[in-house]
Image 1 (cartoon, rainbow, N blue to C red):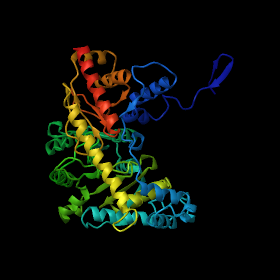
Image 2 (image 1 turned 60 degrees about the horizontal axis):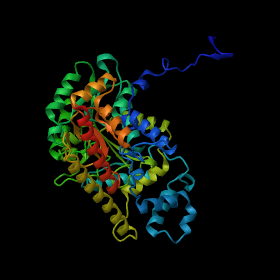
Image 3 (image 1 turned 30 degrees about the vertical axis):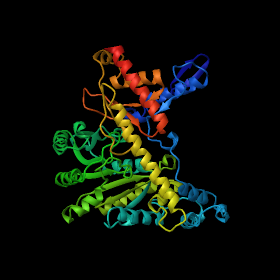
Image 4 (image 1 turned 180 degrees about the horizontal axis):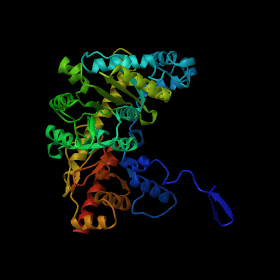
Length: 491
């Protein structure tokens, strides 16, 4: 055994070192919680310790964490979850009857009538049935088989699971997965971990971040020279770009996937977050079935939803689902095996997912309050989306596309050549340099566009629209002031 002496102690060499660890993990990056966020947490600690800064608090606008930003939970959801967590409360007359009946139904479907029991690996049966009925209502009657529904630990877990199934091969036969640029960094990180090939296709910033068929064709043809592209991922509404794809665009993408024999993955976690006039959410599944059996019987599709976004914002419960369409039965058996190894998604998250897809109905005691809260949350987000776009567009050197949906703006920022040079001399990407400087000078924590991918020579940042309106206005005023100062300093 090798030993090395340090002082008087004899220590064995570590088995796990940076050189012996899984190299794919080292390649993974996740900008949303990356170096800027780590520095923001250090600054918060410094402020608590009394270190003087030109600001009194850190404003984290880096992540779509609704409740952390002050969005209020939906009363009905929390009532039912409280009843499920502590069933003694079912005897309390302070809870409405519809909340109690939902809680009883969920508890009866749990082992030992307890939220603390494991569920079936695919998810609680009655919840999957409710998800299937919800999808049918959403899609105008297109049938949904509960057996095609898997309850997941947030949407992220479902996405990674599907990528695990898809990835295989070595060299030129290694699986390639087409992802949009800019993209949500879960995709690039998961592909790096799995050793798959990331195939970039660029969204068209000049056309409000729309998908472009000719760009998909270019990307695919280029990728086929060095890997085997098998899947196409679409985020709609978009993260970080906030666009809502048109129905025509979705049709084009489905036809393209069919022609090129690609597995489609539709990340639809922001499906209720649509704000812009003339924009509407169309699910990939609905459009697929409306295109007729030529497509609906053949195109393989996995679509994803979550309790973390929309009007719910319940990120911490880690609730989600995926629905698979036209999956090979033998592969589906392997998928069921794969999820069973992880035992099950968190049962409180499954319960919450049930409430999202089976919310209070007209005539039920909680309906009026539920609708009032839901509408107020979505209306406020729509106002803040418009406010963000309008204020950012008043800043010379910042251009912001309309925030049509989701929870973020992704403005284009012009950086002076002198700043770009200084950033590169420091070994930093220019928009990382810009965002880090903004954090140190203003306390505002944003994510640089380079963390999501962008066209060479362009720079952006992602900013959530979630803070309360008064705080959002302060944040936007500070961004404006900083950008003008930064531009002047480096011009």
